[in-house]
Length: 417
Image 1 (cartoon, one colour):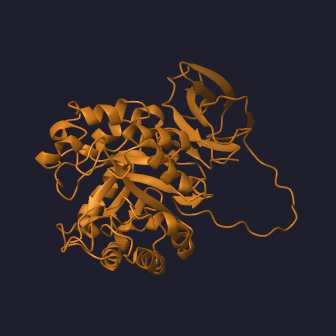
Image 2 (cartoon, rainbow, N blue to C red; image 1 turned 45 degrees about the vertical axis):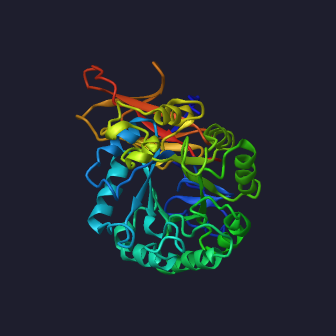
């Protein structure tokens, strides 16, 4: 929600003695789960809407990150190879992916893909293999908790209800925390990701309890098992009712294993603020080209599935919002946003020539509202509302009274109060 309010300007503060209180709990370093929802470090709710990009098969198609961002997506899910089923992704390639995600202002889900269908695919890796893979990348991923999610093991078991999914997934979560990972972890359902035996659904709370950080989300892949609205709503509702964070990590408009009800999937996601990712941007083998969102990696040539997913009802273009970490103060080199809280924000800028004064304005579409004039290079604005988006800019006025052009706008998205 965008908002322009009458604000009280404070350029200095009077510190008064206050009673001693217990120190507040430290704010999480990055993305984390709170009350069954994925939120950012500042507490802002984050609904992920994005695309799967097949990096392990197409490591030379890195222009896809910018193209995916241009669709309105706020996130991308990227399969990585572990050296079992697929070529092992090198640390420098992971660095490239993480850098591109940040550059293109995308939340990045990294997926260990070689565990797909373990028990039915002889080349598939185990969940323990995935833990070792992530541990080998620990130094590469440390410090990126604000925009990287670790998808522990893609579709880790085949069809059936007898796989030790719960025990192995819980062990993997504990092992990654013991190894020092502070990222949000995402765990996939068995049954080739579709949880046809409801193993993940019925044991999700056990996995949540296994994470000492309380920072695990669940990932369901919706293909042929989810061919009508009743199945979609029942499955997803089992999580949202229990305040268990759920993301639809993969789905499509059609599939060889049945016809997914994409309309129901997207409608439930929109109605309940559930994240989703379409499979996939481009490059599926020819018999499965119906899964491509664009033809031959060309963003100007969308497939029927691409039009539906990106521009159709409840699609990416409907209500996808960029993460606040990318919106807070990133639009201007001359004006910066710092110290964003639910009720205040600080603006800073470099000093111009001696005698310059500055006019601070709130921008609302084509209009603007004057907030204050000051000779300082920092102001704190108070009286803001939580969960709102504000836009600010400044004008510099010379000693002779000549006003320069308005600066580029900066954005401040306040966390919930």
